[in-house]
Length: 322
Image (cartoon, rainbow, N blue to C red; front, side, top):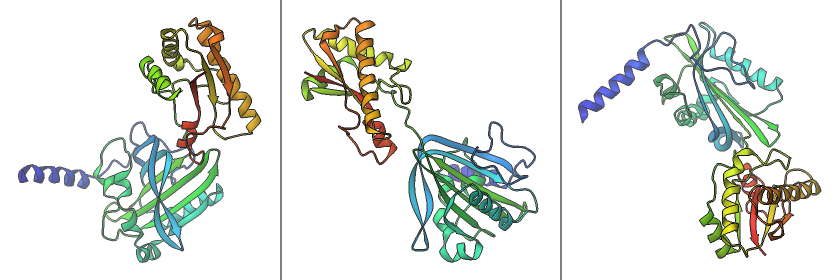
């Protein structure tokens, strides 16, 4: 067992000691549209998640602290051009973020970073991040022990649906005379719903047990009452449940989150409920008289509208017994 461990350790060490390719970007990667790289840098590794969590550095009473945020996460690791200093790269990122309207949550240069032990605070962040593939240089960029000329900036900017967070941590690599740059961008993310369909039996059980059932498999185009194609399976299961109980009568209730004007959401939820009833009647042969469509906007939330996760739960169609 010890021999296997030593072999694995040796393979990681060899990977870390092999010089990276500084002539071209890693295939398939590119800069994030919101923040271009420091000129002349090479994109060495990239990755991300459509909906994930990340920890960003925030200032609390002037001291750095990690805070968890959620959204669409993009991770980038760059090697800077040979001979450029970490301080120069850091201040260029600061200037770019200021120019783009970002508010600086926390920033430090070497002396302050060391004093506040910021490197120790963030050393796990590259290992927590999602990457295209494992790489020893990326995972060990901020290992314990002071890295030469370490710098960090964490910034935020309001955007539709939430905040955009950007943090850049960097340090020199003495052997290669290049600056290592860990860049992380977290944007507001809209949960792509409609991926789970409630089957006929579950619909029947929900109606019998609770008198209602929430159906997230019916989705619509944004701010419209146009039912998306991927809703077909859920609509079919709804029709089967209604056909299995011919005497059953239901309300079809449309719900929205609290974004936008209430009256507009009320009208939208009514149109969406009506659209569902029309499809069930026209395509699946459910008698129109068995269904009463009603829209209630955001009057019956099942979660807080303060987060996108909560708003996604509130956007739904329900079958309710009548």
